[in-house]
Image (cartoon, rainbow, N blue to C red):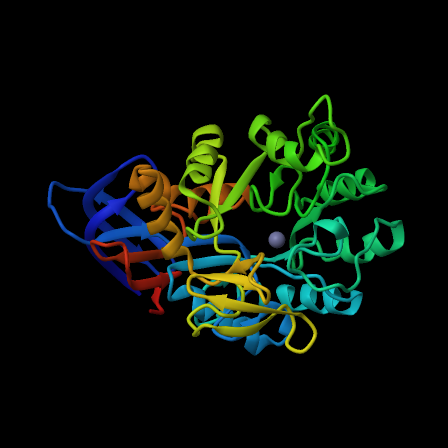
Length: 384
Ligand SMILES: [Zn+2]
């Protein structure tokens, strides 16, 4: 099937009036013109960090739950995502990776599944945040290899805490298998992060959240004051990172700091969304139904039941794009790049997805003037 649409194209380096054409699942032409229109064509968003939506969580571990989450996020402009696990049991991690493998590149009726983000087993337990208490694993040869065997068939991304003994071997083994290795839910020191970069850690989960910084490390040593994961992430050019740009996790100045220091090619927007996306305020399971942690949706964010802590996102990527644009004043093409081409490049998939370019997959979103999602195409097929 061929098609074409004209509106203001959001290209990686600018916006310009133009026409997008596709044939089957591929973009066949991107032409700029002088025509002015109030609507936009953006590349489909790529979400590196997403747990659930519309009542379902990837830890519910059924194909139907996966399709529900993918359809939900497609309504918010996401055309590709990496299902992200929460802390669970070893059996749950295995089943999670099996399902990610089975549904990878399958038709979900929504966003495409790129492969699983194994998130939880290797957290530093005191940095677990709102995650349930289940099987925190310390790196061990046999058990690690059992999980890493899913590389290339369901496993794409692995989160580690560099301060945990044995992590060097785990990171190197994961890199050998082609995985993206990220640091997250960690209280490592700056020198430990420096080591981790040498091992092959290349990305850091949700900057400013569930990580060490000068203030936290000072609780153990008054002076000299030391730097932690936050400072190491801002410092090291080898590290990309991501922000939850819902406007509730991070204030405008933290988003501006991340954008200024990392820049739009090293900073991705993520939803970090749980199952309460598109559902009313109330109590929900974060993670598996019946086995996760109870959290609350309160307006545009998830909070712990006692309302003293944050408990993941409840908004889609479109909200993140609008919010980041409004709070930082960054140019629209750069904000959209942080939601599409940058995360695609972080995953090593930028030759296939992430921008409106001839030969790439016809994954795109039509937005109105106020950047609300009007239509969504995955592989040239309209799904919203
Ligand atoms: Zn997290």
